Amino acid sequence: MKKIAFALACLASTTLLLSSPPLAAQMQTAAPPVVAGAKPVTVQRIQIAGKSLEGNLEGNAVARDALVFLPPGYDKARKKRYPVVYALHGYSIGAEQWSKEIYVPQTIEGAFAQGAHEMIVVLPDSKTVHNGSMYSSSATTGDFERYVARDVVAYMDSHYRTLRARESRGLVGHSMGGYGAARIGMKHADVFGSLYVMSPCCLSARPGPPDEGMIRTLEAVKTPADSAKLSFFARATLASAAAWSPNSQNPPLYLDLPSKDGQPRPEILAKWAANAPLAFVDQYIGELKRYRGIALDVGDKDGLRGDTRRLHEVLDRYGVPNTFVEYDGDHTNKLGDRFQNHVLPFFSRNLARGK
Image (cartoon, rainbow, N blue to C red; front, side, top):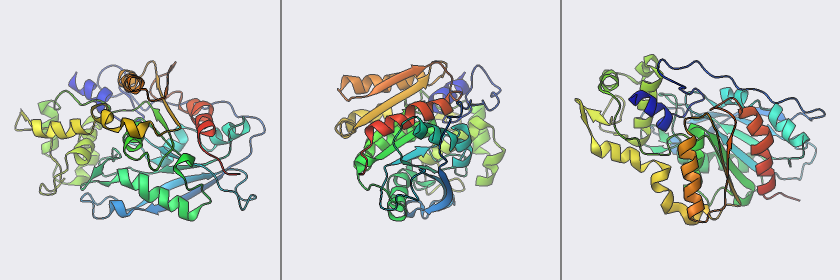
């Protein structure tokens, strides 16, 4: 049961445990119908180097893949500048795979054809040695929080015709990316003007360390490459430790696990708890009130719905304007529909546009 609790509370993936181990197969997402008359967007595959990632102890790439989707009018309207939406993928996948799960460019084209204002959409990649950065700041993985909020934004502003004001930048993410959107959104309201959080993982502090069997497995890992041989849950635990309890003096993985020799390590669990948005949201209420729009959504069959609702309730208690939708769906099956018919229209309404 501890493995299941970890999956529901801390897992950020497009794969969700529905009942009990073993882990269910990768769940499929459904594409919304093609919108008649939709005009094609331009897809560019680029790399964005990040000073924030330099010197990371895992050896994760500093130059990261990214997908950029330019609206149909981009090449013709040479003087026009556009709002930008930064979209963050979940754990165990990268930007390329997530692009298939949210059916871009089809869903972007569909949203525009149905009346959403044109914008640029960017999918940066944050896959790491242990399959996910948690969009956190760590000497071990690299500072992916700052990479997204500073390096990627600066690159887009210097290489594309963007509107370079926070009111014209949106941030969205799903699962681990939803956690990233919540975390980065709270801490970098000076960069982004609207925020959409989809089925976020890891909002709550976990109640305790993994079971002893998993810890023994993790303690036996001798090189970062050994991570690829681990089970999904074990690998996700390493990713969390690398992000939230890095230790530059503890090679070869440069991280601390939340238990050792069969004993919980309260000081490490405290570090993990300090990275839970529901634990630190109260510190950022003033920043959250700066947003032009905040939206949260989650499927009613998603094990992450409880924490998502709790985040919404915290915002409501503080009078932070937000919308919350618990829709008919699970963790992944409605992603294409949500992205086309809810996420992009939300940003169309809330992002400031150029003339």
